[in-house]
Amino acid sequence: MSGKTYQWHKIAESEAELDFGPNELAVANLDGKSICVGRHKGALFAFAHKCPHAGGLLAEGFIDALGNVVCPLHRYKFNMANGRNVSGEGYYLKHWPVELRESGVYVGVEDKGLFSFFSRNPH
Ligand code: FES
Image (cartoon, rainbow, N blue to C red; front, side):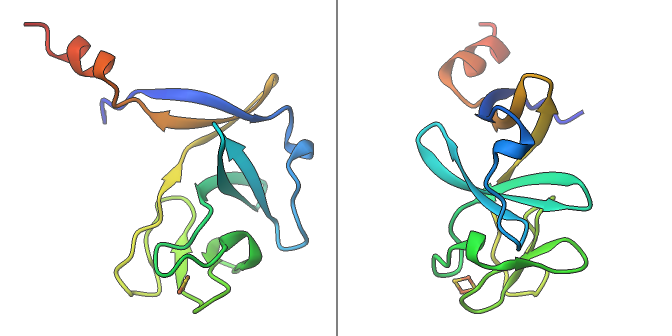
């Protein structure tokens, strides 16, 4: 158990509403901020809009056969599921869990707010 709690934010009414390009990447809005959504073998992955290396727009890159997103600027590769920089440059891609529900597509943001701090520290 990770003990993590998430707040789920709706990013689209349905998967079809996400504006996937032919590269299976889309830009979505998470609470006023742009994020990137990738689709690989029917699964959805949410991660940062900008590459952690030098800010390349990941939605303009592509997804390789193994399900890594490849940045359009310098071709660093990141595993969409866990954010690992699989091409080995030592960066880390921020990413969030995605849930497809009947009521829409949701992205989970880890709850690190004051409330969760106090609720875990009862004194
Ligand atoms: S900006 Fe993405 S690899 Fe350099």
